[in-house]
Length: 286
Image (cartoon, rainbow, N blue to C red; front, side, top):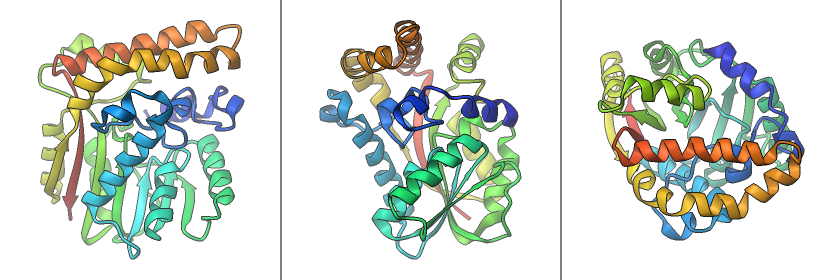
């Protein structure tokens, strides 16, 4: 799983066409955030040009739940090209260490962090979430945003999160999940669409956390965004705001690529509507 994910993000050529190497097509929709705008705000969803704003609001909501402040030392596991970490450092003045397995994404994250003059607050390094290269009790917050679905050995990774957290430290979790109603063939199709993820249910994740020693303190189900707002606005705004850009960047196969991406996201929306897919924010304490 680690090598597959690493190869996928390192092989991106599309992001380089618009200055965000490693971001792929998702970066066109969410900028440096690389996670969906799972925020129940109709004004944001009805304007694709505001989807990055919606993704930033997701960071804001999770940071509020985690009570991040200027004294926090945050480990951002699966930090992408660094958008959430830079948001936390800029907004709260906290220190952030971003960990990623992709050399390409890390290179882009370092460039963007330098351009925003946040090098004194944001550090970036290569590493594996299942074997964190940090000392015990090093961080006050472990932050994982739209990344955990990549992890194959989830109990092992959660034990690593627990290990590097200080006593009373916080795990701030934000991610997709499947549900008890998801059929095996639907799970397999999700794996084909989203680069061989390992989705679990929120109940499984909570059980893993609690068995390790975490105490779940807060949980927010934002699946209604996928059931209600995405079906109303996604296709129209994707066609209006992003299809023309993709076709211009990739004149030979951009049209085909937009149809594939749109089809895949519409399948995910269908699962949301059938209560076979969900999205949760969760806070757990060591």
